[in-house]
Image (tube, rainbow, N blue to C red):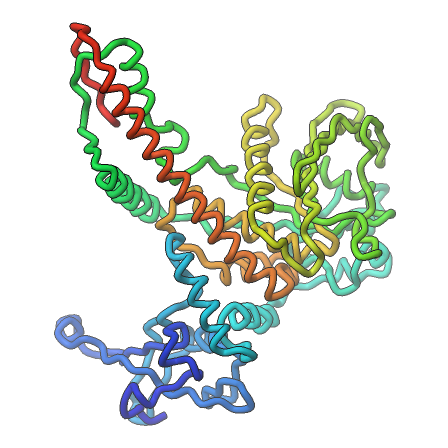
Length: 496
């Protein structure tokens, strides 16, 4: 490959000059010592990547449909020029990873790229989503158990099968091999954990935000208050200066520790017993159901729970309906589930406003749904009979589209709650992570886009709440100091 004469010759896609998301920045590998590297900054350029039949052709027999696949290739394999110089990909100017507080810019950039490209699917949300298919084809996981003739009747859809490596294995009944099968997969997010440095940077970011807001209100927060206060005013000042001992700061929240998901298909008439066996075996206390029983005249999920005030038996388990509460876009049902020895309370949240293969019109309802579920799981984990593991069972009809979208969104929200707005989030990599554990998670571009929009809504909403809370605390402090009395007690109240 000959060296491009100038950056102006580079054209990765038609929007390269206008949208930095399309730019690939390379650096010449320096074979000299560290002193040479420090003295001579790396030379960067934008190579001209040719296209062939609307695919990026890197000249080695490999072609890529989109930029994400192209970037993935160059991250693994450097370019070697005819002169012998080695070119390594320094970075795509705008990849899929971003800081949480940059979500507005990212969404706007992706939308502008799509508007500019019109029907070209290589860029924007569609470009990122389409690249997942290429990466998914590289998986070597098997699904032998799901294809066994004796297990086929337990699958709602022939092409949606759990991987053997991640499937939930039920305890066998009467040594029957087929009795351990259910179309459900474990999905874990352990690789999304933050490092301590990320948490530290998050706290530093919060400090700067707090300082900015206090300055904008023209109120200076001293390191301590040294005043003569009445008992009532003293209590108010202490209250407003006391940081939440659990949250640690205003943009970090309590999350469910070591959460594991079970992604499952909607029940068939012949799998209801297996479903409750799984719930009992895995000690699941919360179920997220993201489908209606019937949608567009098609059966999406059998009713696997008793009607309100009734109870039903499922293979040795008794499920009794305790209550049913209706909210605007979802229902909450409470069940007592028992065998011959013990009883557990299981909560089922059913979201009813999410169309199959589509997305809700507004993320607010889904965010409230997720928040309510996580509050319940946190409360459950604090009970005397708390489960050993925090497992959330999520299902829709196939257990991949709406289920995958929910799980990815919940994973990323948990990450932000844990590490603050300064942490890195990556929708593309997270979808890739869950797809490596259950095939087909997040089915289409609309659902992929919805994850971005819901994250944007969540982060914007949290920012607003954080600023309001800070302003309220400042106002309380000012009001308390205005009510100073002539008490002779001199007190010092440290902020930390």
